[in-house]
Each structure stands twice: as structure tokens, then as C-alpha cells.
Image 1 (spheres, rainbow, N blue to C red):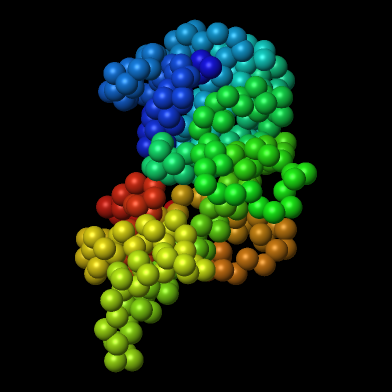
Image 2 (cartoon, helix red, strand yellow; image 1 turned 60 degrees about the vertical axis):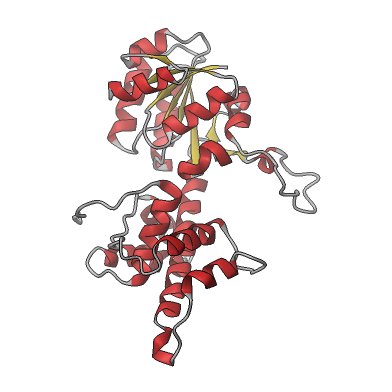
Length: 323
């Protein structure tokens, strides 16, 4: 399938390469020409502008956006609205707020353009591992995108389906799922990231206690304990794999300062919990811990930062200023 990729940052470039390896044809655009040139060297067709990208696609066009949430995505959608035709498909694969999706879907829908919101999980490892895709918006458009989704997703691999799933949606077993109407994909991804905050905080706090076990007369081999728990433990997880790797490379985390950013979804999760009256104390406290980390860097916060670097390539900012 021929598609356009708008945004060649940490996620967009990886996704484009995975799709091209799967036999799809990519037309790539980014405001940084060097990134476009690199994708051309890897087999994509370059476009110097969004208008050129659209011209190089055939109806029904598919333009997949991997841009920062907010003004960058909103501006691209406004520009696309003037360039795309009826029955073309715009996909927002970034981390937009689900309420923005609802409005954008209505606005594009009035022009006959299909809009799909896609929550994307997988980080910098998704190019090789595959991406977990949470989709919302126009169901027919999602069905049309199936060849792309199937290539991006990890597939069943060695994980057997959960017992009792005979009557349930089979694409979930492949790693992608249509979740509902406009905004549903990003809503599910928002909660996913809130849970991610909580899981990371639990690991960070536990390992902080292990690191301070000298209070009880123990000098524990913390990197070895991380490796141990990867094997047969009920807390084994990909985040634990990343933790073990970080501790093996730098047992004292001396190279990590411990400023832990939040990209927005954690805040939105807490806001949604308040609006729905659903108590989410663990997720809320995990968010507040990130706020605190910007002024007070404990071992736990250093480990959070190391995990973010490990799974998403998130480099610590020189300074974070509260807004």
C-alpha cells in the first residue's frame, strides 16, 4: 500500500522503515530536509512539502501523521483539510488528546475526509518488535488501513491467545484493535500511559528500597536482583527487562540525574479519573512523583529516567520549567 508519512522523528522514521520492509511504498515529509533525505536513502520517496506529499499519493490517499500533540498536529490537519479530497484518510498516530480527536473528526468529516486516531505504543524498539496500535474513528477507514496495521503490529508471535477468546476480536491477538468512535484510540492510549507511569513508579520505589537496604545491614546486589526477577517472577515485564539492562550498565545510575518528564497523557488520565469519579490513587501519585523529581533527585527518580531512555529514547532535558 502506498502511504504518506508526515513527521520523521523518533517514532515516525522507525514506523516508516518497518512499513517499507513490509512491502509498502512510503512518501515521506518532515520540516527537516536532512531527515527526508535519509529516508530517501533508505527507499522512501521524498516530498519537500505537505502539498507535494499529497500530490504524490493516489486516491484514496493515506497520510499518517507522527507529530507532537497540540499545535503541530492541529496545524498539519488544517493544512491537510485544504489538500485532501473526499474519501482520503488522515491518521493521527501521535499522542493527541481524545477530545481534540472528536472535534477534528467532525471538522474533517464535514469535508468528506476520514479521520483515524491511533494510539501507538512500542517506543524506539517498535521497528523490530512491532507496535501496539489502539484505533478510533471511522471504522471503514480503519478496515481499509488493515494492510498497514498488520505490518506495524507485532503479530501473535509466541504469545498464545488468552483462554476464552473464541468469540472476541481477533486483531487484538495480532497487536492492533479498533476501540470505538473518534477519540477512542487515544483515550485507550492515554489510560495505557497512565498505567505505564504507575508500573514504572512501582519498580522505581521497590529498587530504591533495595538500594537502601544498608539500613538493615544488607549490601544487596541490586543489578543481580533485577536479573533474577526477570526469570520466573510474577513481576517479570518488559519494563523490568529495561530496568535490569540499565542497572547492569550503571549500577549506581551515576550517569542519570533523575529529572522525569511527563508528556501529557498522565495528566490527562488523572483529569479523566476525576471527571468520571474513578479513584486512581496509584496513577495520580506516580504523576506527582514526576513533578517532584524535577527538584529532588532520588535513586527511584534516576531509575525512572533510565527506563524512559531505555524504552523510548527519551533524553533528559537540560532544565524543565513548570508552566
